[in-house]
Image (cartoon, rainbow, N blue to C red; front, side, top):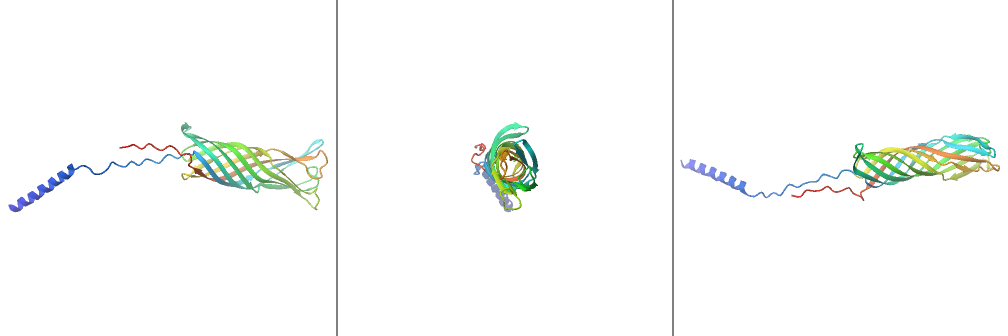
Amino acid sequence: MIRSLIIAGAVSLALAGATYAADLPNQKGPPVYTPPPPAFSWTGFYVGVNAGYGGDPFHFDAFGPGGFLGGSNISSSGFLGGGEAGFNYQFAGSGVAGGDLVLGGEADFEGGTVSGSQTLAPPLVTTTGPVTNRLDWLGTARARLGLAFGNVLPYITGGFAYGHETVSQSGPGAGALTNWSIGSTPTGWTAGGGIEYAFAHNLSVKAEYLYVDLSRTNGLTPGDAPGFFHTTHPTLNVVRAGLDWKFDWIAPGTPVVPKY
């Protein structure tokens, strides 16, 4: 009997303690709200590097007092590589074709080995010999228009282009008629497009195509009689890849954090 009373008392005390503990105020604070990270934005300044391949004929034409004497297309190709800098602004929520409109501008400068050579004969040149056209360097300043689908940005681009070309002939002997070099800095335009993919918050890779058309320039081959001259007209198809680093100097808006 006594043993039963002791057991019953212990059970009653345990139940009373549990009830009292349940009535105590909760010492835990409110749940901590972790805001989602801000959506990726293309807005910001960026710098990068690029490398690729370029090629297309250099158009070489000769003229005399009576007009056009003849011409030739000197095939050219080679490596191009350099750097770029630009700025993008993303119109968040613009909802164009399911994406956000992105406007920007980019300038680049690169050196290369784009060149071509062909043996020419009078009347295109004074004496028969190989003529070489070489694009020493190339630069562009372009606008960019794209549609952002998250971290993927297809775009079109176009603007101003400039470069430096060297036309030279290396023939037999040491005379100025067969060994000469003429340099010029033609300007023109460029247009193309590409696609860029951001694989990290600040890093993106891109693939791009550009068509470059530089203006026709006049030159006087050493030994030409009065009224004789040649012109060159470099054009270029450029396919290249690039890597860009974006600076968050203009950061997207911070999400609103609810307070408890």
